[in-house]
Length: 436
Ligand code: HAM
Image (spheres, helix red, strand yellow):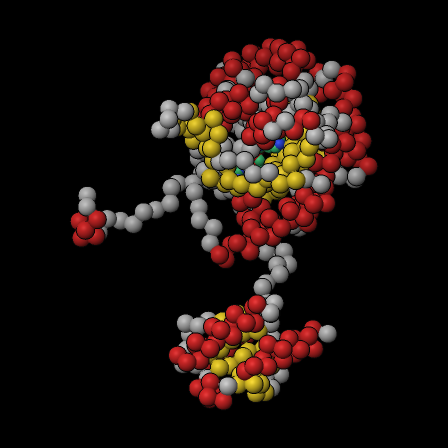
């Protein structure tokens, strides 16, 4: 169809893809608060920023996240590009971080290498409350050290970040042991579940055959009932994994971080071993526990991807979910942008001068706002008032002729005439006096 026939035929305007969203300016306030918190926590805890590409080889996630996981099997946005390469839009970032760690030889840096990221991830899931197909995560990853204090540091970081956003979360904690000792546990689990084949849901029957650990976090009521009596991972931990878990709990006790031992917590990605955790928020609108974030150890991921064995632990949180809760609770004390000065103008000549004045004030470091497309003085003063500006500088016909500016103090309504060439210096003094 040609462009002109499209215009004639009134083709409906394009729409967002299902599960995707625009983040409009009003909502950015919440996003900025979260991003600022993430940066400030990264500084305090010593994490350096890393940005990895949105697109990666599909094989990275097949090998890293696991070929049998729902994320890889059902949810990944993958395609073959023009050069015949199998590409995926990243469903998560941990595999990419480990790829980057290996590719840039970070193993030779002092360990742990501590990295954080903020970016969008893609999963073709059924959209619902707090679940999108393109969503943003921030994450913190600490690579190169196996001590439980690192697990504790990360759990603390996520907990405190939520606390600073005034969100009370419940930490869920489990240890799923190491691959070498997991065989015994999986046998026990399979032997327990085989008596309940008639009760398990269809997906769990498939999981039982291919990835039995994943049966543990099935949300179906019938499966949940069966799982009440299932063997628990921490009863099958080898001594070193048990010791690691006990030490982690001791750290959390010392920090007075309450946690709930959750034997069903296994997480949906295959790279985990030992510690796994999530942050849950009881949300009425969601009708239950909303997972704000989660993470765990992935000591074998580097070897799986062909790198040197590198113990590691990390966490990621979903920004949309945090934003939803910040909005729903509406208690976070947001700092609104408040200009010191607002410029109001009347007429074309004044508008020309006003744009220049705006630039001069801003260049001098003054917080200044304007609406050069508005005309009436009343309307402009209303906007200045709404923004909380301390002073309004008025430029009308008279001021242009006299080469002056009318300065109005918005707190007490007093006005004074200032020569145009002195305005920047004078307004700086006036702001200083008010702030003192
Ligand atoms: P995950 O549990 O898959 O872990 O995702 C972490 C968080 O991202 C979730 O708790 C949730 O808040 C958010 N999230 C996940 N899927 C969606 C979605 N479809 N829509 C909105 N938010 C979503 C990971 O991704 C691991 N890489 C975490 C990790 C880091 N493990 C070790 N290091």
